[in-house]
Length: 369
Image (cartoon, rainbow, N blue to C red):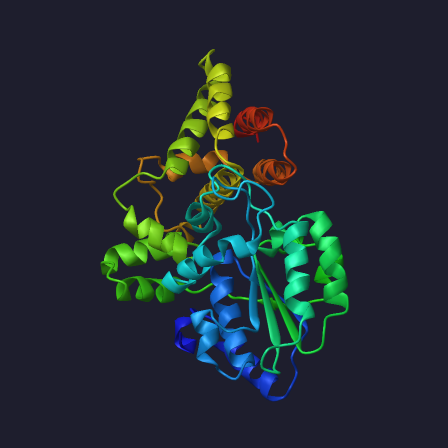
């Protein structure tokens, strides 16, 4: 891995190099990106710089670089899952490409429909890894990937470690959901904001990986700065994404509410289908939907140049949808969906939650100006 392999973060790398040269190394940092995908490659490269550009860091076999990541039980690990139980999966995935998503990780370890988390047992692992002296007398590094999935009990245990870390210890928390990290932990970490890679950077990376130029740029524009999402999009350009099908069904049923007496039942049936997804996919679907609604708003207010395509692959025309998304309902629509994301984290009844979202969306779309 070279500095040029870290997409769109060259200015941060230069800053890191200068800080390390001047011995200004924070004991705890939060790497915050628009996508979790982008944070791990930078965290690895920072560790590589901190440990004197030792190639073992990038090979994932340096004794002083440790990892923590969200897990859950699987068919093989039936109780008390620890990161060490999945370290071979972790190494395999990172060495394949450090740009991978939470969904990629879930599939790699086979957690099926369960939510991932970093719990108290993993917090104890972190303590055990960092309480020992470094093997080579340099820094010890702990990279916590998916730090927003640290549960409250684990976060309270880790707070003391962040407040009073062992000497020459660097803790890096990687996240794309800053608000989900305990406020007392956030306040004790130096915040590093990653800029989302420009579409041209992601396009060029896809082309280097063998994707056709036209398809590469289309996927890059829709990826919102996530290389893993761009890869998935480029591999399925001829297919309609399941989220798109679900979104279109939702909106079309909502629009028919005034004319179709059966639309209420159809919306409840729709909500049950979405509720059957795992929590990560439920959250991803709501984020996808919010993104489409925002694109419709841009079109409505003559900012169509910011939207890559006004017609979705399924044929759903955002230009026709756009007039129904305006200043009179956009804030309520956004709040409704964002609250849905929040309630999923709190283990709300998914059927009731999505039925509520579907019915309220119907009301808002038909709301008179």
